[in-house]
Length: 64
Image (cartoon, rainbow, N blue to C red; front, top):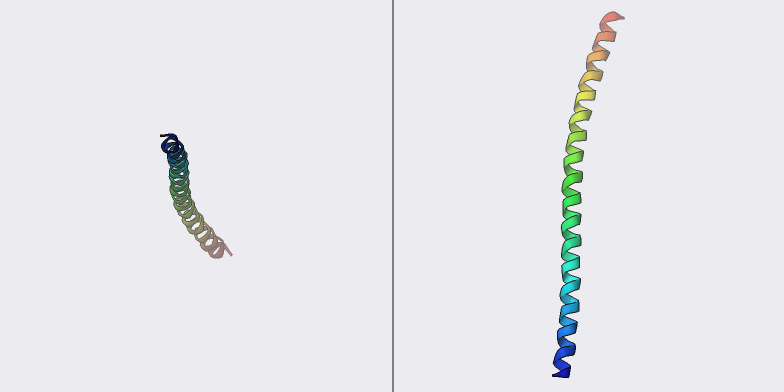
């Protein structure tokens, strides 16, 4: 029964480690999803800036 107890402790330790890793993976995944959403927003902002830039260039050309 002593050996069995040691095995149970090992299993518990491994399960705790797996839980920790699963949480880390989950956190990392959530960070990546947030980063992706952020990049998509930045992409939209860049498109707006480009459009505004072209508008200003066209305006300055017509005034030249």
